[in-house]
Image (tube, rainbow, N blue to C red):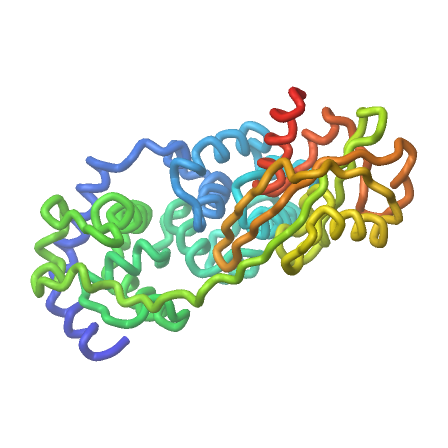
Length: 369
């Protein structure tokens, strides 16, 4: 932490800041399902879901998840397919795979009790400094920082911190700052209040400074530079990829061909319709037919034109998928690894990425299924 930030901290009325912030949180906090109690397992699940995902999106997923896996033991016993299915559509699937692995470790090595020490909880797969701090402070009352993008934005303004928040090393500066100002008697409320302030008041582009409960403590507001902070360099431009996909049903109309993606990489272990993932294609229909023949040793009769064009955006990548419908023989694919022929009802039980959920929904509507 540089000398300027240290001076800014010394100028701050920390006790009054804590009081103003926490009283506002108690009064104004949103009624969210994961705030009903401080069960460590539930806090952990909610924090993993909330990473890179909007609160409104998470709420129904969180409620469905806990209905299906109400205890840490129930989740640890779940098979991989049901874990991916309950997460289907929430994205960033490595989160739930890591959570599942970590929960198994908690059950096997910690007797089902989520560790309450920074050393032990940080050893769990997928638990970084933010998740560790959030679970420890909210569930156990440990005065540990929980620094995410919201918190860095809030504190960059309050403490006039110009360090680039896009750089990983900057997080350490904010963690040190939180250790100086955290309310050690109420760390749960303090950390949640900082997050809530960033979500509701101290927003990225148009902070509502006149409504802010800690405005008098904000050095950026005092200097008139609140809209200049935080400093954040832009991400590199995203890569675009064109894809071709085939929804293939057997001649008798009873089964559909799906495949499982590789166990590592993007959308690992999710299911999809046969897809070519690289490059631009011309002509598309014959390219897809050739791929199916060479890759799967099958002859597919594809319809003349694509029935859907699906665009999907990842954090680092965009997809445009042109989709064709077709038919294949009834008795193929029984012995090809990672491919299955499934009925319409069976297909609904497998976890698909959002783009292929959209493809299937469009296909069903088109064919009145």
